[in-house]
Length: 384
Image (cartoon, rainbow, N blue to C red; front, side, top):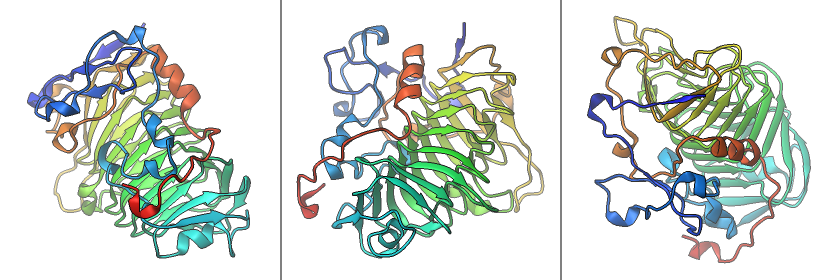
């Protein structure tokens, strides 16, 4: 049996979990007592009486309902909300009707697919600002290389499959430099030569949700290296993701603020989470299930480029569930640095107490899903 591990260091209050009854359509929310009462959902029965589901069920109601709906730091991402539809009609790497052609255009676009299959990328596919790459309705696999989000903002990437990226420094999704307001949702990522998602060089305000990571070593890097002190601005939310036997970096963090909640991480090969120089990680209601390596949290010491002394980062664990002999590996409270609390930045987020039911949902409902493409019910100008 596992046990829950909670902390209230630095004066932070304990969270209150608001769980709807089985007849309620509203998701459970974290209740911030300082927020307006309209943001709290009614409380009733226990989680055992409730059918668990992932957040964002409402975003499939119409095509553009994704815009501005991310929880956490990426909540402002609107993608191509105010642009026309762009239809991908070919699996070719480039040319008219290709994904690359749509992504390079400067105007806002909501990109959808009329074809299914594999797009073999010969080079990084650069995504410009105000784009939604919406893979609902088809099965699109990207291979060879990955997406590069460079100096862009307001990008949504939804329901794509990434596999088999080859070459030096080839990531599934590379976010750098100076990119912001990004939401990566419901994607499957595996088997790249470098990272699956890397977020570095002052890229910030990003949410990664409902993704499935597998068959990989260095899964997710946040913060480039100890010399890039500008990465102190990084703020990332990772929630309802399934890290499925990947070896390390779930994530590894330098400098940034990272809120992790309701993720399921199992069978890592080195560690689950790593806090390095000046990082602040808030791990809330996640499930950690060890394989041969038992320690979930690691601390690496590095010297920031503008400091004389080396330091590691900080991890706060609140309500996490450690099972199968998992050892948290947390530092003593007295050794912790001051860390942020998510409610300083956003008032509500969907969170369940960790449970076997949550674990089962994340195993089956994260990553690419076979979904219909929602109807575009309103003109772009009226979509809010």
